[in-house]
Length: 206
Image 1 (tube, one colour):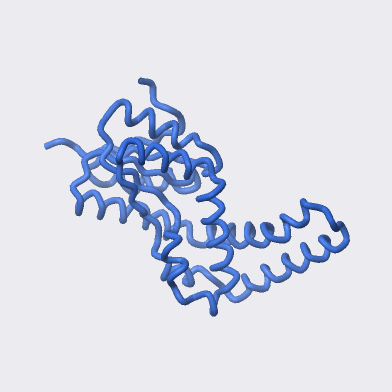
Image 2: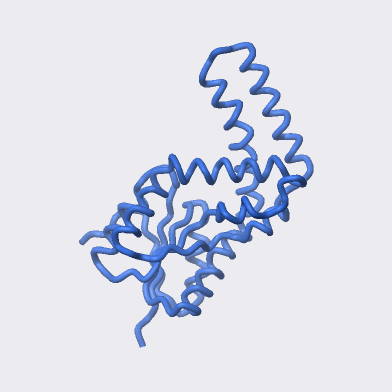
C-alpha cells in the first residue's frame, strides 16, 4: 500500500514563494490537491453575524478580499492550479465559528484606532498614507488579535480537515499551504498519523 504524502508549505502570504514551491513540487510528482487556509469569502458574505460583530466581520472580509485581489500568493497559487487542473480545498475553520474568538472589548480597540486614524487624517489632510491607515490600521490590529486568539484551534482545524479530506476523497499526495505561524504545529499533529509529512520553506531541487 502506497504511503500517503503531505507536503506542508509554511508561507508569509505576502509573496509568490508558495506558488514557486508548488510549481517545483508538481514537476517532481503527481499532486492530487492543494489545501489552503483562509476563510471562505462566500461564507463571510452569507452568515448573519455582521449586526452582532460588525468590526470583526468587516476586518476579516477586507483582509480576505485584499489577499484575493492584491496578494501575490493567492494569485500565484490560483494560476498554477488552473493551469495544472488541480483541485483547491479550504481547510480553515468554518465562518460560523468565528464569533467564538471575539470579545466585546475588541470592538472598543477598533473604534479607538479608527478615531485615532481619523484625527490624524484631519490633521495631515490630504496625506494619502493616513487615508490608507484610516482603512487598514484598525483592520490589521483586529486581524492580529483574531489570529493570536484562534491559533491553536486553527492549527487543529487545518490538521483535522486535512485528514478528513484525504480519507474521504482518497487523495494520495497533497500540498498544504498555511502561514509559517501554523506550519510547525500542523506538521507535528499530522506526523502522529501514518503519513509522510514534509515541511518546505524553499523550492525542492528538481
